[in-house]
Image (tube, rainbow, N blue to C red; front, side, top):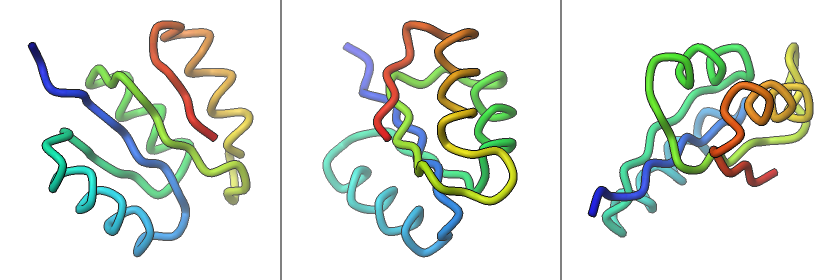
Length: 80
């Protein structure tokens, strides 16, 4: 069975790194980005099972990012 793949998206870089570290300690493959635009680029390049997404971000909001993810990758779960 493949490990769970999680993408953490938040404009607070320290929070992203902390969450990635904690997830990896539990055997979860985790990566992070600091904007909705970066998240969309990353998701086009790699498949993720779950996206943990901040709602309020400058530029592309979490809600807009979620809409695009669910439209293009409906199998990906999103946690706001």
